[in-house]
Structures are given as structure tokens and as C-alpha cells.
Amino acid sequence: MNVHTRITGYLAAQPERKRGDLQSLHEMMLRLMPGCRLWFLDGKDEDGRTVSNPNIGYGLRTITYADGRTREFYQVGLSANTAGVSVYIMGLDDRTYLAKTWGGTLGKATVTGYCIKFKSLRDSDLSVREAAIREGITHATRDNGRIVDARDPCAGSPGHISVFP
Image (cartoon, rainbow, N blue to C red; front, top):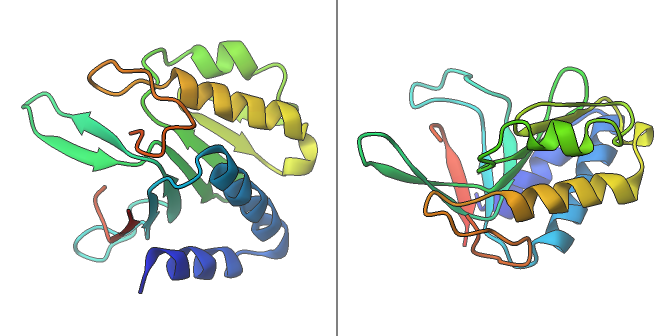
């Protein structure tokens, strides 16, 4: 099953409110990162155990581990959670950047080191939400220090991963 089919199925399986919020964010990400690599992670490990919520990924970054091993992973992720929807912006060196810069302007959102959680997108301003995600993408760096730009379709998990180049 290809990644587009898996993403469509994941979105369709969500309750109506979350489905609409995830679909809006998915469409926004495709606008912000046109032609980017798409990912779908089902949240299961190699033994089939659930280890995270399923998530959709956009872009590409390389993670370098302390022992020198590397792994490709997405740059931005979307996921439904028990309370709403999460947006993950990977590769931020400054774990306080999102909260300091956008925490007070996103409306009813919880902002942590690399995650913005929305109970409902109705509770935040679209232009502010998009600006925060765009800025987060722009400020995220690859392990080699190159600034990643949202317009770069090649910007930079365990489990069953579907990837679309």
C-alpha cells in the first residue's frame, strides 16, 4: 500500500473534528513544502506493539546518533492524539524557540520543545498557526548545521514506515 493511500486511510479513520483539523494541516503542509517527501508511520515497532500514535511526516532530515550511525526521518510530523492534534517540528537546536516565540500567540495551544498541540484548530488563528510552523521549519537545522527552508523539498523511526520520495 503506498503512502498516499495510507495517509488517506488514516485521515478517514479519524473522528469528524480531528479529521477536519488533520486534513487542514495536511493541505497546509503540502502548500508549505510542495514536492516534499511524504511519510506515514503506523506507530508500531518491529514486533507489532504500539509505541506511538500513527503520524504523517513531511520532508527529510538526517539524524546522527552519538555512535555515528545515521537515520533518515521527517522534518515535520502531524498526529492525532487523545486531546486533539499535534504538529512536530524536528531539528530545532533551541528547545525553547517555539514556546518563547509562539507560545503566547497561538491561542489555545500547548507549545513544547518541538511540538505544538491543538485541542481544536478553531482555537487558533490560521495565519499565526501557519507562520509558527513556517518559522519552525525555517529555524530547524540539519545535523550538519545547514538551515532548512520550508521551500526545500529535500529538507531534512522505528516501526512500519511508508515513504514517498
